[in-house]
Image (cartoon, rainbow, N blue to C red; front, side):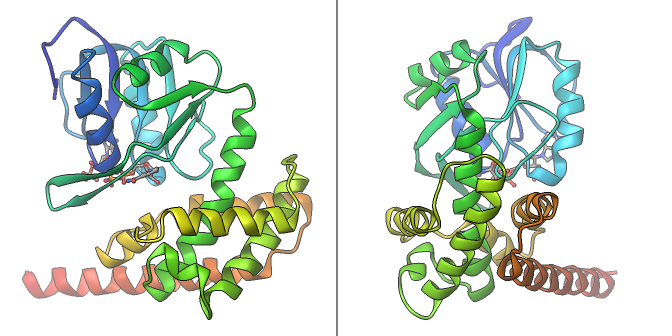
Length: 272
Ligand SMILES: NC(=O)c1ccc[n+]([C@@H]2O[C@H](COP(=O)([O-])OP(=O)(O)OC[C@H]3O[C@@H](n4cnc5c(N)ncnc54)[C@H](OP(=O)(O)O)[C@@H]3O)[C@@H](O)[C@H]2O)c1
């Protein structure tokens, strides 16, 4: 879908017309011609700057699509650690209610070097966006918040702010301290105490929000567990750092997902 006129080559394209992709595209299209690309989009236009905003488990297909658009640069703003393309970080937030997209916050968006033009387009569209030299540290800090907030809120079905209070605070603190050890081994400069404070700060500023993993569980969708906690487990294994609380939460979320999958299959059989 082209959100403005349809030039031969779009300055910006977004792959993934979901909550965040639609939010970015609707604002960008007011200042620059922006293509919003879904699974079924054809024919594909060419584009200068392509932003990947599919769920992490759909990244491979989205990157193949991006390459076919003959881009100058492709960047992911997904959560988790994806390996296939340069990755930025965003705290912009939106969610879907059926087909409607509800923006939550325009947040701040950090991009790797080389994406200055895209950052300018985003700023013109009203987003707080900039290029940072150490994007890897920003991604690891985002991973820290994600692996502490998402599994606890999804398992207990509580909003982010619940992590500030007993009984959930003890899980958040244990997860933050364990994650810090793995992230330090990966090169991030952070102490266990700073990691706990950072997670609590995010829980406070997003207190009323439902995490993406909680939204996925409530909607019966697959979660990004493999790319959030799973990514941390892989880092920890590589550096031989013990993260038993993360391992437990990873397995618990996996059990929930398996139950959602078998419920879905049962519903499908009953419909046939
Ligand atoms: N939502 C937020 O507030 C937020 C905030 C920060 C980061 N993020 C991250 O941003 C990413 C996207 O999140 P989201 O909440 O926007 O997810 P979402 O609402 O599920 O949207 C993903 C969209 O991508 C589409 N898609 C899947 N595979 C595709 C492909 N190969 N080509 C084109 N489109 C494809 C999906 O189509 P179908 O519906 O057909 O599957 C869906 O429309 C995730 O990694 C998430 O963690 C989200």
